[in-house]
Length: 376
Image (cartoon, rainbow, N blue to C red; front, top):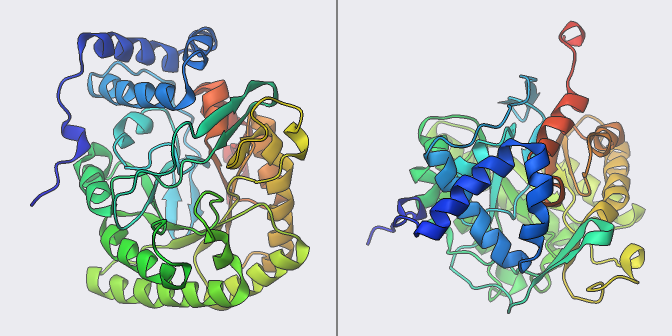
C-alpha cells in the first residue's frame, strides 16, 4: 500500500491559517521574530515546534515567506556545490515533512531526519526543555519518526527534491529496539532506501537518547559499521549510476585519545565527511539552571566550545583528508566563524535558529562569505 506523504495534508483549520500568516511575518523580519519569541516560548517547546513547522510549510506554499536570501557563496565539498556554507542540522524535521518551508529560509543546505527503519514514538513526554538563561535546549526525543518508508514518501513529494533546488542531506539511525549488535542492519536498510533521493547521507551514531548508540564510536564497532556502509555505498552507486557521499556524525563527549581513534578509523574507511558534533550529556555550564537535571542532550550556546574542541582535535588528526561540517552552539556569526577557524568547512544551525530566528542564517552567511576577489 502506498504511503501518503505528509505534504498532502488536509487544509489547516482557520486558527492555523492565521498562524501561518503570522509565521510568515515573523520569519521575514528580525524585529518581528524578537517580538514573537516570547509568545512561542510561553508554549511547551514541543507544542511550539509542532505548531511552527506546519504553519511555515503552509506559508511557503502560499508564497507568503519573503526572507532576504544570503548572497551566493558557493562551496565545493564531497563533490557537491553548496550555495552557501550555512546549513540546517538534523533533528528539526525528523520526517522530512517540512522541507519546502525550511528551504524558504535561505539555508545553503538542509539535513532532515534522523530516520529509522521502522516507525517509533520516541521517548515519553515531556522530552524537550528550554534553558533560556543559557540559550540552550535539552532534548531526549529518541528518534521519534514515522519510519523510513514514510520519510522517503515525504522527501519525494517535496518541491525541493522534485525541482532539484539544492543540497538535501538525509540523516539515518537505528531503531531503539534493535540490539546494538544488529545496528549495522538498520543503517544498511535506511541507506538503501534513502540513497536515490539524497544529496548526501548522514550517519547518526552519536545521539545520547538511544541506549548504547554511542558504543558505535568505538574503534572496532565504528570500523565494522563504516566498512559495511562503504561497501553498500559503492554497490548503490553502481546501481543508481550516481555516487552519494556519506558523512558520519559524532559526539562532543570524547577526549583526545578517542578523537585520535575515531580519526584513524575515518582515515582507514574513508567516508566522505564528518559532522562534529551532536548534543552533549555534560551539564557543568548549566548545573544551576532549571531543567539542568533532565536527561538528554544539551544543545545551544554551552555546546559551542566542546564541539569546537572536537573539531580542532579532528582537524589536527585528519588534516585535509576529510572535510568537517561544524555544528553545535552557533548563536551568532562570530560563533560560526569560530567553527571555521577550528577546522570546519561548512556549519549547521538548530538551537540558534530557535533563539535567534532566520536572521541568524543571513548573519552567519555574511560573516563566512568569501569575497569575490579572494575566490580561486
